[in-house]
Image (cartoon, rainbow, N blue to C red; front, side, top):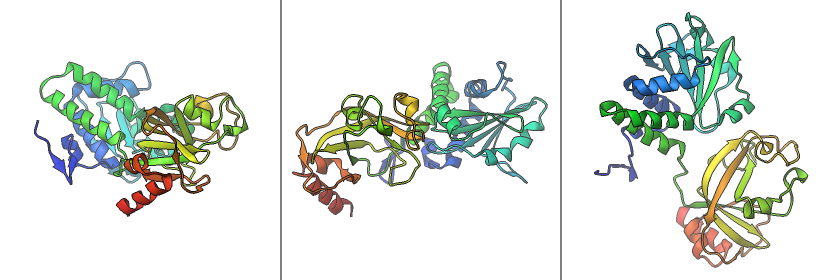
Length: 325
């Protein structure tokens, strides 16, 4: 297939021409739902609050519908019910106040309906972030984008022709958007490790989580300079040297550190949402890299190739500065 690029970046799907904002995501989803009966049925079956979901053959789709209370992202109108989708990029979820503006639209339908929130957040994180189970008697269901991708994948197996084409386009688009990284995708996040334990206890030190559990975590959404988008690579230093470089193979946000590691004592930090990174195999060089200066506990960004080739971390940071400005 002939490759198409835009601003030197590959265009994997026609939907990629829209962009990657929240309205772009719901526009792509809405257009595909309108053209794929299989995906409509699968999504409604997943989010419907009772065991028997209504038929979707006669559904209509509407984007950005406005009334006196506000504007919805996407509505699926069934003969006697209404499904409203509110989407967010990243791991945040819509607020209860925002969703409450739309509950009346659903209540006006004989069979009611459901408010559906869409984001990269897991259901556990959405609940921990304050997403209610219902608003004014209207069920609220969180749909992670990964679950929507699963439904698209399932529908693709059974569909042919034009319907399959649009499912393929949406699948390629969402795969790119929800895994998007910073443009400088070879930047490595370099942090220091020590022998302290999160919450002051538990079975492992911060160093052992990296060396033994092959993971790293930090508070999410708490400020203090922590990234909100996951890095592609991480480097770990202790005792005056960078000892390990890893690719991040999976990133998620969990409601609290105890959600993954229940042995960690609960405190004001460990009970808050955390970004959790799974570390892939080590990346060369495997010999320790001297830091070249005392960075103490500073968290640093450095280009991967500079870190791999410079004699010290300080030289790699200077090389990064010269290349990126």
